[in-house]
Length: 363
Ligand code: SF4
Ligand code: SF4
Image (cartoon, rainbow, N blue to C red; front, side, top):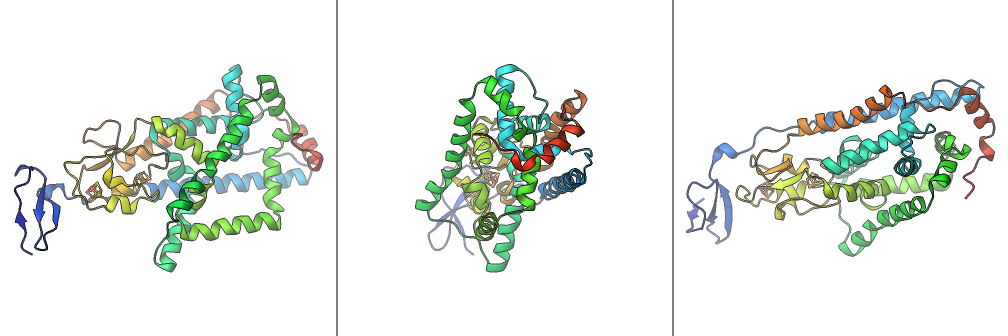
């Protein structure tokens, strides 16, 4: 192909030059071949299954715990199950802000919440695409769907934008409800039987799931096959909260304009449909730090996760180490401080379980 150099403003030693194709189109071309990116990283493909296995292990352990209660025996309960009580954790967090006290009912839920908030505040919404099992399952579903039908779909903007606001309405509802409670009210709720048995009630909800809930979950799974991260993008209030806190994250995806050849591969790869190829830095609430754009970029040191706009980025492997370090660092602090396990005695768990049908939130 005959390619003519133009009298562009680019200097001859710039890594990228604008060339005119025979059909008249002007495109950017990489002139420095040493910048062609060959190395690839797949750290996320190890971290996501690791956390999924951790959740499955916690689930099996919790199943044993509840089975024990059914047989009149209170065994050791896995504290990590409290990671699935985000509203209780939100209340614990506000209670801590107001009183400085880490509650003894669901302390591990509080520490997991703090770890996740810290990650989103400094490392974007990495929780969603690296740790959250729902995020991993959603991703696997749309990848499977793309294999079956050949592609994924995007909702038209006029539905996409209002639907995306749904998760913020849900978040606003929870934030408003919790912010209106005084420290005494929060303390009363935290110490209530309903909160103490919230994990057991959650288990029983899924163990005896209603037809309606099954239909809703089935519909979400079906939609997730065709639309990328359907639940996360439209309905998850936890993701909405992390998206907002991630706006202040110093770490973000940055693009080096002078190296960019405008191939658009980053934008095509982005599961959040962000126009990465047109941004200097990705400041969106939807960015989950998944590194898909970085891995898709064919030019070395052009698209990076970084703290400043310098050219050195944080590799996917180092990001993974940092993320795991923060998460388990917080868990480790809680364990060492003797605050990881709750203070509900075996006798109290047995009494709660005997009465479980009569326990409600009382609102
Ligand atoms: S592909 Fe890039 S911009 Fe898109 S969500 Fe992942 S890290 Fe963020
Ligand atoms: S993948 Fe994106 S950042 Fe990388 S060269 Fe192409 S358009 Fe530029």
